[in-house]
Image (tube, rainbow, N blue to C red; front, side, top):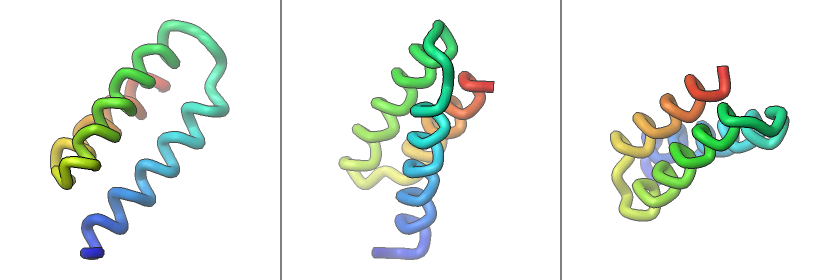
Length: 62
């Protein structure tokens, strides 16, 4: 795995942990949509799109 892919995988783990801890509600629901899009992009090996979606998920939780 490239260093960029490792960072993306770590970021996915971090965002997922934050999502797991978040209280139920519209913010969490919105973040889940972004996280699922990030998973799809990650399986397509599109790190740029994955990171954009992870950033959007993080923003949705804040």
